[in-house]
Length: 289
Image (cartoon, rainbow, N blue to C red):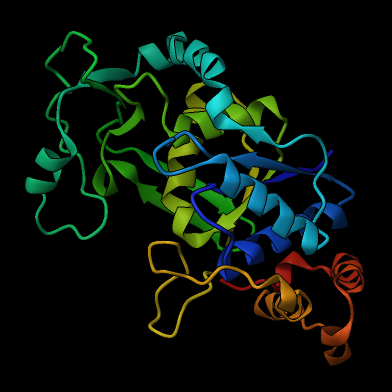
């Protein structure tokens, strides 16, 4: 059975980019007679709160995007993540790291986004302390392949583009990468639809899935909705919250952006009618990278 999911971070309200992802994920699941789940990626308790989570659910309801089963919260599942963290497949491929984020950034001054970790602590056999991260060790040439439902085949050498990545933090919480893999497995997720900006996250998660012997879901990376400056819409770029008063127009324009070519008359219909049209006529192959 098809099981899809939408996994927002409750650090602010939904914007046009995130509601577009939700619409695509929902329509693909329902077109395939599947389930659609909500999971809140709220491991970073300093950035997230329950008020934003509630607001996100209300916004989804206003767009008639109704989820199956009770929404889940990663912040409430750390005991499960800890069990997986101590599994042989993880223990054999990880090490403790004492490098601070500032140290790594200072050693990679030319990187604008995420710097490549050089493996400084890989062979130090560092004893675990409260101040240490746990990193997953890559092979010297760790090439990961993804057969994306939108992008086609993608290959990337994670050793060259990111280096050994953190899967658990000093506060005892695992990172998004490991938590996401465990959640997708435990909820039986078969299809992951997300923005193109998360492609490298997907590649890391595929590596973890393979090492843990888990079934890989199908991945589809959506084109990014951008602002007038060519930046992807995000909370960091001060994207405006979705105006639910314009929900029919927003739903219609999201379908246009996703290549579905809805008929013009639909923009004046209620969201329930637009949703029903979208499910009946949804074609993932029309979504272009």
